[in-house]
Image (cartoon, rainbow, N blue to C red; front, side, top):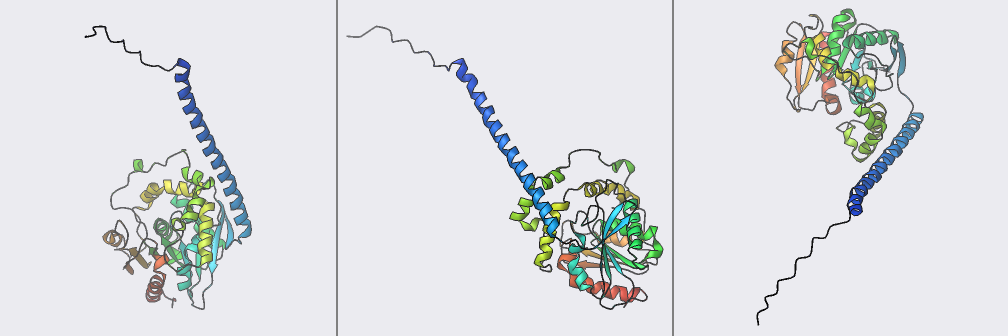
Length: 346
């Protein structure tokens, strides 16, 4: 028999009670809150640990160099006497953000062992102060001039600069021409050929110092412990003690206000030196690193030296930090160039 009775009506869909629905987002918020509190706790612990380790490292590390008081604060000047070679001293200036310039130049200083070599660590670098002062090319060169005078470095001297210090050696040779007997550029930065307008060189004001926060929180310290190559130099020319000191001082100095201000003023400082040329009678030796991206513009460097009677550009198959990996070749060429172009150098 066929049953014509209707099928039972479907049961209504089950719905969660209103209080259950409201519990889910609360649970998510609670989870997020716990996660945020955990992260904050870890950061606070990391920051406190990093501060304690910085203090312990500084206390256990004997500072190098001589702190020379200038009008704007104390600069650290490191003088390495030569082994008998007579003539002018060689003054070296580091590239942007180098944590310990005197240690950074160690392989080149060893190869230049016959010369008196002086490294002046700018404000924000090495053991120098970190004053809240504009890192303009005018301030940087006047501070350098004052420090060298107070450190009694005999004039005239050879002045050499790596990377961004190319701006400062150029400005220095123009401001104090009687103090400079020759210039050495180690893959130096020069202003581009195009005109840099004033409206392109504004200096950002305020903002969050993210680099400083990374250093203060200890994140940089843990990163360099896991990957020392982030801050240690390439090559095999450094001792284990030098590498350890560079790593420590990177944690101490990274993201400080002086270096950040200098970084923000690169375009402005480039505009100020754009029209400058080295004096005609000051010999200039320039090393350019060819194994880097982008490749160096040798023609641009040559165009800025056409008025200089004795100048030479040497292409070196290395990275930007030539004094890390090619110190013997660089030093050998420096010696030959100075002997040939600077009276009294031998």
